[in-house]
Image (cartoon, rainbow, N blue to C red; front, top):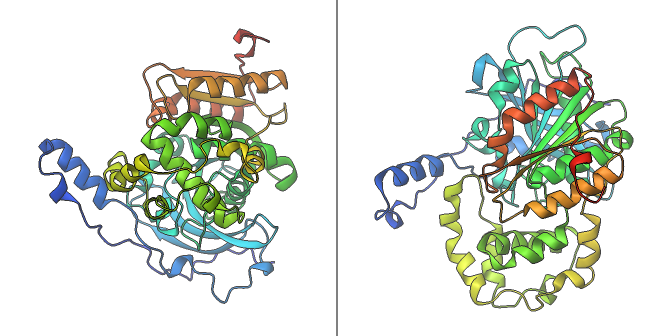
Length: 416
């Protein structure tokens, strides 16, 4: 099996500057316009040869083995950052390549290796160009990165399958996300300066919250050699049927539903034409090909989103139709093994993932015997809850690495 560190492939993956839409924004306040220019020019671009696996025998690599890597400039605090391509496992057990980033703190690793935090990113898009590892805002998008590096943690951040590497991306497909996270930890522990440590925690936001939970569900069977000390999730996507149904009155909700239907029609072969009106399909296709990296990217999505207000679903209760009903249930995370403590952060003004949905999932975890730390963020909506809970999350993870008893809010929850 190939597992060695490959430093020979240094193909450049620096994305070109994006085209702005400044002409549409001249009437906005100057500061807002300038912020948009910065964010837009930081957006990701198309794939490069780094992400290609043409001519590579993926079956000869172990899960989590490094295929190739290259240095990324600009890592904070003297750390070394690598863009990585590694072997993982597809939904049918087939060998696939997944891309991501590993960031190693400066200085020598301790004798037993560094501890690892796996960051699972929120929705950035569903086509290859939307990979976080291609984004100029990469380091700023990993919440709490500088603090994690200061504490000596290796940080690994998977793109998930089909982002960076050839698509389609299995959007909100929990097993796909969880395997990609676990294999990113496998490759991270063997990067130069990591020291081969086995202890890790996972932390994710929104789609990444779902990924973090599935990482906890899969860890013992998929990567038994690793030691998962805790799962942290900010506004995780849990009850998918409820979330998609409740969000349909909002533009953001329609966007998420459109991306889910588009992805699953390709990943699972589910018949999207039985759900989406013919008039709406061009708008769905346009949305599927646009990335979401910063708040300002909503401007690029306004046109197709507006089209969905006119016509979208043939059947409003599509979540009750097969195969969609079964697929939604399959990708709704169940409870974790009780031995894995969980940290749940939730913005109490979140309209995309309502607090009640996350609270219900917490109650299920509590009933299963899991120690759950509930961390409500009173004035946060969906977008900034990971940022606003980063310090508390990292402190909680530090306690798990230290072997301290996991705090639990379960006793304070109703119906227990």
